[in-house]
Amino acid sequence: MGIDQNSVTILRGFCDASTKAYAAVIYLKSKQEIHLVSAKTRVAPIKQLTIPRLELCGALLLAELISSDSKSTQN
Image (cartoon, rainbow, N blue to C red):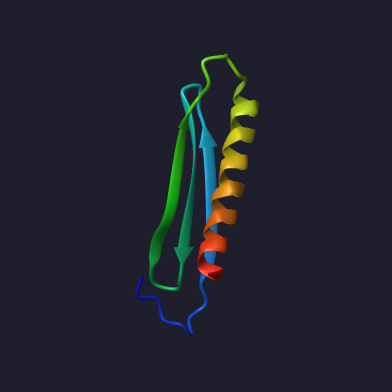
């Protein structure tokens, strides 16, 4: 990614949901640059769910995304 090994980097994750879909994204931020690490989207289920429930689905998707990315960087 071209980030200096000695610079401070921050891993940031965001998630959001609507009535049609929910998504999660992970960014790696250094002092001067921001890089997209990974992102996932899912279509909302046919069964009508409330927005707070879909937000929880987005948070779970983000947790799974962070977990899979951290496992892949450790190996």
